[in-house]
Amino acid sequence: MVDTQSAFDDRNIPIDKVGIKGLTYPVTVLDKRHRIQHTVATVNMFANLPHHFRGTHMSRFVEVFQAHYKNIQMKGFLSMLEDVRKALDAEAAFVDLSFPYFIEKEAPVSRQKSLLEYRCSYIGELNGEHRSFFVGIEVPINTVCPCSKEISRFGAHNQRGIVRLTVQLGPFFWIEDMIEEIEASASAGIYTLLKREDEKFITEHGYEHPRFVEDVAREVVLRVERFAAFPWFRVEVENMESIHNHNAYACIERGKRERSVWNSIV
Image 1 (cartoon, rainbow, N blue to C red):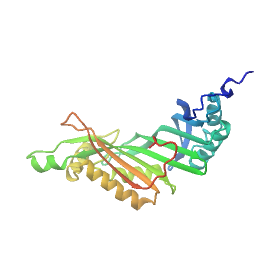
Image 2: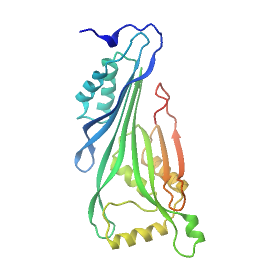
Image 3: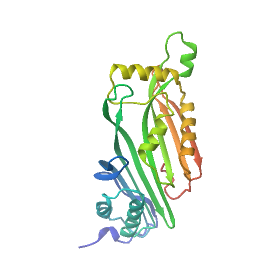
Image 4: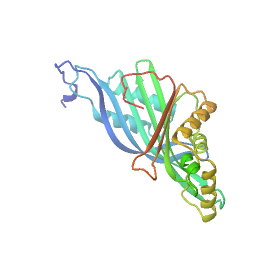
């Protein structure tokens, strides 16, 4: 059959990124407690397209992912990038996938168990000899406003927030361990199932540990730097303010990340 995509294009314009977005696929990821966890990922896959090709072969992205979806970890992920590059006859390849990751948590007093969802992502890029692999983790937290506590006679306003950590590997780590470090940086953690005695404990614990978004960002940076020597990482903290119609935000980056053709990522 005629291969229209490989037809010659005389406009002399290369394409930086071409591929597929929003592919939903079951994947298997590492789990510290249970060894593996089955989840469902949303996948984006791209390659660059030389100027002389009219189009890319979209089906080849899915073929490559089909061959790798049971081995979604750093070594297998980078191998998948190489297969994307070869299959598309490209110089650069990029894959990112995001997925819900569930951890069983115990309530602080009643010890009732429930599952809490965390949003995670794996991001890989390959361009010539340059290879990078990133892990992203989103952790819901609770914060109590130090200013509100200081100036109010009764109580202090609090709100749910989110910490977004992106690290460049680097050393291997367990997602569960990093989540513990992030939650310890907040006023209190978030739980799916709480009884009254747990609610009392969390409310009082948060009041005794007030945190601005700036405080949380700095605490996470200190804990990440003690945790491992990552080449580069970024911490973002966003509070969904309870007494304002806007959010509070703080961001800190550490290290140096090499830039490639995928300047828009992370």
